[in-house]
Length: 237
Image 1 (cartoon, rainbow, N blue to C red):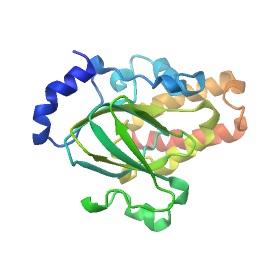
Image 2: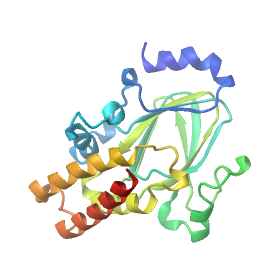
Image 3: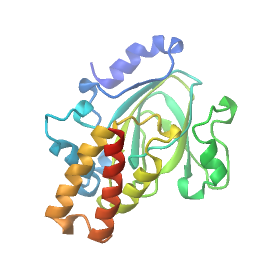
């Protein structure tokens, strides 16, 4: 049974379900959208692949599947790991996106607080509204992640995942250090141990072949931010 057949089979049950997030579905392997199939976007998957098998990383990826019923809302959320890609397999949803650089301290304080379901996507000048229909996809920039919210116009099945842009490693690490553990990061659940295992592989790569990782930042700055992230994850493990 493929993903679309699964979504169709479950459709009659969706009206009785809350949103379900599943990270461990080997038969529903999520792949980066074809538009992003470039070496610069494959870095995170490569690092995960290099993590020793003795260290458990669920499905050996940071991908996810979301099955949601009509009129369900996922209020404002962030991805502390960096870039996000989402593909709509079936159904229809509406995604709102606000650049994190435009958020005020009050906005940050409100993120993750008990939401008002009628205010799932506050409109402002810089809000982007993106319809997600079957076979459509979106990529949120790894170096400048957005705050997103999703309203499900009908029973919908989404798949997605996390990616890193090799050119945006320094801002990605800074974002991770700023937002990991934030209440609004509830959709993305890699454990500190999983994140630390990936960061160790990144450190090995930077030290072995710095030119591959420092075309857009200095090795010193990258390693300094990486050390901050590794210490933070080590404390949380």
